[in-house]
Length: 484
Image 1 (spheres, rainbow, N blue to C red):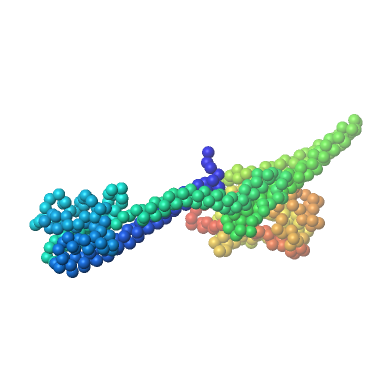
Image 2: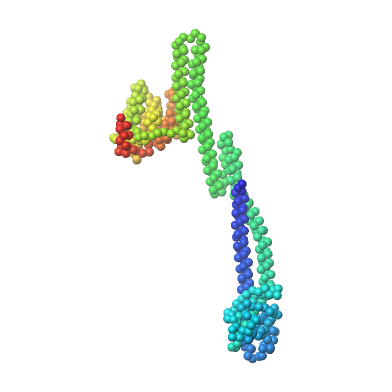
């Protein structure tokens, strides 16, 4: 089981603080220790310089016992921590604190005449001797032509006590600092993650009945605020989708209720009349057949739209002559043009334009656009179909001189079951799904469908495809099949 983010952040802060504190305190401890040793070494070098000067001036003037007594009485030399040996191995001076002290650099057990170890430069070492910790400076000195071995020491008891106390305080401060740092980290991470907690709680409480609710957006200016705004945008889109589904379901129910009611009424009338003539039964059956066909068309349209929404609508594409495909659709609707007394013009390109698509789906797209143009164009009006290419795209346009569309309705013209008030009423027939289906067919072909219109001045529906396939790029077998 993974720990919550808050505890993980606290653990990270704890580890980081522990490492930082350990490094800082160890660095501080060793820095202080080195500083103390540097001060002690400087003191030893000062004492050595004083002893060197004293011996240089007096070693030839006074016998050694007198000179030794003068060193013994000189407090600056700290005689208890002084050791001195001549070249013949005779120990000339030995302080009480250095009694029997063995310095590894000096061979104290054998005479040193003629083979005295070479310790010309001062060396410093720390020795534990007689229950004390001594800092010892030792070297070999030539004074008035004679060689001597000198050792000067000082007691590190006081500096050691200071270092030990410092180390103790450091050890005691580590858990205190870590506890304070971890508590602060836990509190800070809680404050930082509080908006996330509220977002999670709000998101968990939401269902289909609470889609109008929104997450409170913290004014933090960071990623948490961006997350809240993004989730609110997502909720808005989900709400719009739910509203669309509800509206679609209500509209579909409404559209299906009417033909069901008509069928029921058409069946009840002759059944209530026991001796109805054959004509009544025939009329009832014809009405039932018409409404059944209309209901079947509506159900097929709904099925196509639902499959498109689910992404399950797959089409096989081939190379299609756009002009020829539109010409065939216009020919299919020629009787309707004559019946309504309309004029239909086809304006084609100078050369054959090829697109990739599904012939049956495109035929339905052209029929929807042409039927829509014929339906809302009064007798004596004109409908023009044009095909062309520009900016690397192939397009077709259907323009009518009909009643047009109000500007406020243009943005919703492709919605399912949407009917423009007054101008496009149920009296014109249809299910209200034609343009929605045309829009979905265009999407299946990666095409864009647009509309331009003004009230009383007709409308233009324009479908543009993403690419133009030239005749030279089509295999001969395909060209022959299309041409035939």
